[in-house]
Length: 473
Image (tube, rainbow, N blue to C red; front, side, top):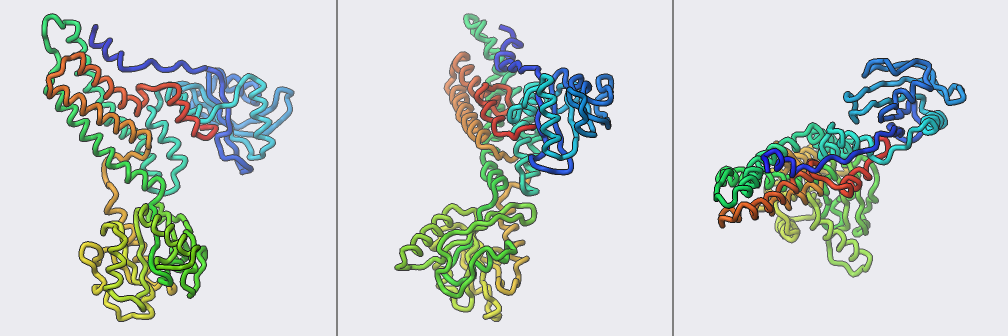
């Protein structure tokens, strides 16, 4: 067994895809000024050229052409622009066409049907990106980042998806995987000389590489919570006793009268959720029922739901009516939340009613200090910008600022499995396991890393990933 053959062992040959022509609307559904229709596959340029008023076959790649598009009966359908991308300089690395036509649903359907009648077929969800992956344009992690980029709805989630699309995450894993493959190949080679009791692989080098890999994996695993929060939104619960001004604060933060505001205690019986973006971060604000003892069955349900939301929150805005609260009572309420300092902001509301309050008297050792205490008057919109800045600062302090951040549950699961497999190899090295047993554990490690980047994959895995893409991507 040669070193090269062992290296090849760890890479499953790429699935052979059909080379037929696929077509789909790439722009959003519905009526708009322009619709983009995308085609990919060998022969797509010739197919479109047959319906276009200009010969496209001999035109260079990355050129745009204006002309008339007619159906098979020579009936004029539209005047449009056609962009040409020739293999391998296209998204899919195949010959590709993009038709920019007027946004009429009728025109779009007629153009697509004309192409279908000429031999193209409708693309499956994510099939363009699947072809890009299979043709080596993207690895699997980058392909998944395409979907995340499309779904990103805040500047920070957009940045995370863009960083992953550029391949920083994959490069780290591929470099470490390549090192392990080189050592693993030497261990496999030793098996051919079993009777001679020789060692080609440096066990110390393997151990050092695996420790480095484990450290990288640990860092990535720790980043998952951060990535997931940025991707899905920071769950921020507004809590406090009745009539503290929680609903008023929610309305001010989202700049809309979504929550009912009343002086009657217990008005809020259920949770109310609203999303906004502050300084590039997406927040999911949750207004809750006032925390108090009650004999009202419906209010009790609301209070219990509020407690559940507090337990699962990323951040708590605890609102206090400063005109009717004292530091000792507030301290007891804060401690009853059983949350750490980094997840609580104490808001002394209704300062217009008690402007001479000294905020420092509400400091609670280990819970509240000047960094997570804000005075305001929600009704008068006083100090709301400062509150927003404090919220962002609290979140930013917890977020990882540098390095790669993972957002995919699939990646997280494979990294956990990678860590377990690495530990098995390290234990084997410590116990002096034979090369054949080490080789088995190394294959597990390489298998899990390879599944993240797509160097190892199954049809079921690809179907599960790409079926969640939109048609036309």
